[in-house]
Length: 112
Image (cartoon, rainbow, N blue to C red):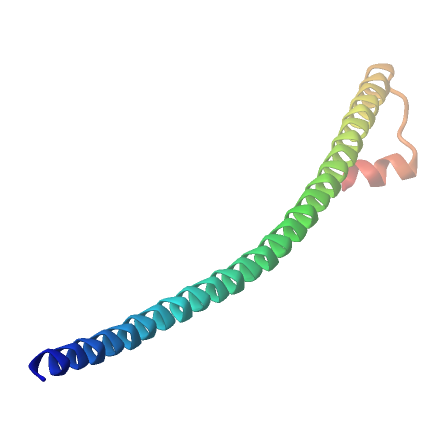
């Protein structure tokens, strides 16, 4: 009887051990699934953020390109203004040298 009792006790221990191992495996699998779902969720969030940042980068590049065009246009206008100023200075010098009388319009412009 003693042998049978021990064998039964061993079977019960083996059965409890199998249940415990099964429970540990189930917990491990659940943890793995939770981790995978968390990683998938994080990956989706990062992917969305990447898309947003790429869109923002494109907008910044467009804005920079537009600002560059505006700057070039302003530089061009500035160059034209300098040429006009030089032309007016030469004309003014010519008038002063020749002693040509100022018109009323020229007198008004000079007074300003």
